[in-house]
Image 1 (tube, rainbow, N blue to C red):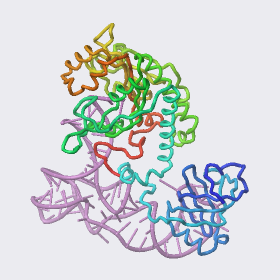
Image 2: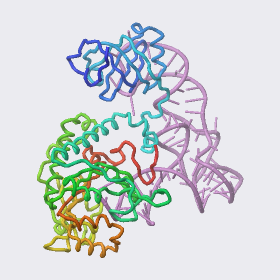
Image 3: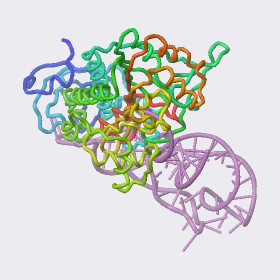
Image 4: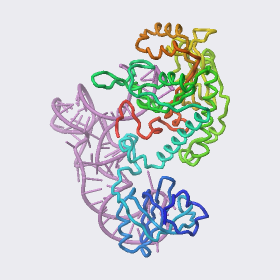
Length: 431
RNA sequence: GCCGCCGUAGCUUAGUAGGCUGGAGCGGCCGGCUGUUAACCGGCAGGUCCCAGGUUCGAAUCCUGGCGGCGGCGCCA
């Protein structure tokens, strides 16, 4: 007999049928000559009733001895049962203990720190299981969207020699007697690749040695990035908002059960649609001040500002046209007003804040060299990036999205460390 | 870089204006129970009170230093 997934047998169709299932003991309760085993597999949980008179004294005792997380194969008959946690239970005819487990370290009392130390075991929990499935749907949604839109998936290197963002946040690694760094972003490499493929995307890790201790920072995070030739700022924003909606739809289609388990406000997600509100940076300054957040022109958005602003929207919101001096050199200054750049950030609602940073790239050689000089950068260090502006340059735009931040928001989590299987933060390097 | 908080049993913790033998829940072990819902009932074991030094008749509690951890800001995705 082949084994069923638990999720698949939780239906009236299976009522009265004989099945085999495999999984791990999630809960176990003994009462006299009965043992209730709540078994979990990757799909769901189901209560199984083991009677002493059916399985025999020896087997009954052996099951009584092992603890939660023991792995079992069991055979029995499915019955509809209102008293069971998931509405059905299995009356067990026979079972096999495959891998016993004693004294599983995680029980009902648990601190964050303890669970992080035991992440390799905590990934089995129903909460983590639900989050990981939502994360999977998010990745699926990305790939699906980009490919449908004619983007090619590609990859940049992880070992690099220079910075994309500020240089102080690079992780240095020894490299055969030389210094190398772990990449902060694949953006510059994607820019080179559009001259071959025109529209490209990648989902890869990025590394930032920021000493941040916040609920939205990781030192190693998954970065979904795209670049497209001939795209202007607004073209890119259009793809992005449609991408965000596509991914949300994908998660809603596949993972409603998991969102419910996490107590996510599902209706909120269902109501998100294009177009997203768009606000120029200068308007945002006024908006912030009108809503009790002190902000002056030239300030970057802090966590307080983002949180205060996004709580006023029930949709992600684009902020565009930031002052040139607070953005990196590669952003294209607005030809109509070079004191601002053609860029955009996407802020997630409900106080979550920035999930995307993107914009149009400077494609004229003179402008790029001037901006590099203003920021004190040596063009020789970026010779290959500068070269792109010498040989058939074209207008182009791109963006980077923090996938873990996105999952953090979609799943409605309290801290980004719950959004990734093994979070890496300034203080957390294991397991 | 800055601000704040914490370290007591395997886990979660009570106890800290110094004072009797440092309590409890969960987990573990032994026993009981035929419908449990993170079951329940009885019993047992389990402690370097983070480390070092100091004050004191007396320190988990006060002081100094160290180690480890947590939350937040800035920065960013």
